[in-house]
Image (tube, rainbow over all chains, first blue to last red; front, side, top):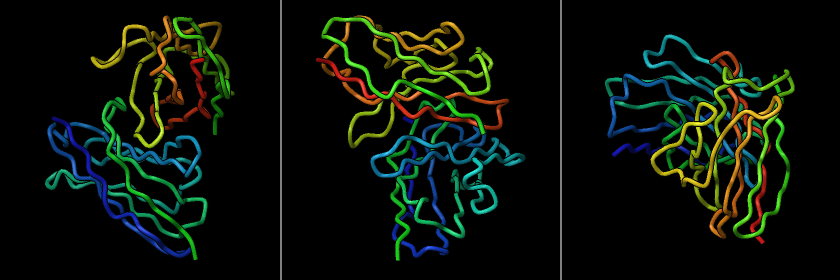
Length: 114
Length: 110
């Protein structure tokens, strides 16, 4: 069965960095593009980034462009999100999601606070 | 960046029917936006109900259906059940390079 397991969340100070990982199993990871979606506490969903199946293209929401980088290692069936210059408004649960948004991980919480 | 709009809250009686809508600030929603609909209950990850306007997953209850209605994407719930009380989000794709969620509709079954 399809499984997506995020890790790497935690508490970080404003201006700091964090790298999230998403371990995929149960499907041919290298055949699928992948998304990151986040949800701030008590708020709605926000699409963050997408990477094509082969890593050839990346797309970002304006709110994270220039600060976040999505990447993948198909040999390890793993998706990443490198987050730099973190702000309080980046505090959220971060989900990795397989297109067409059918499978979601359980999420990992990132808290940006001093 | 486009803004996607949904009704903030709606109420339906058990057994009743209602339609949630999803509009785009850029104009009419079309099949080219590949509209998605998600259901999220407290403490849970979202669950996809509808993709590509009207396609259902194997887990989507038959009482949910998706369509385009007067320039918007629409999610119709026919025969509401108490367990349908949840937050519902739509998602639109813009040229396959940008995806934007609506603000969500809090559905109460009462």
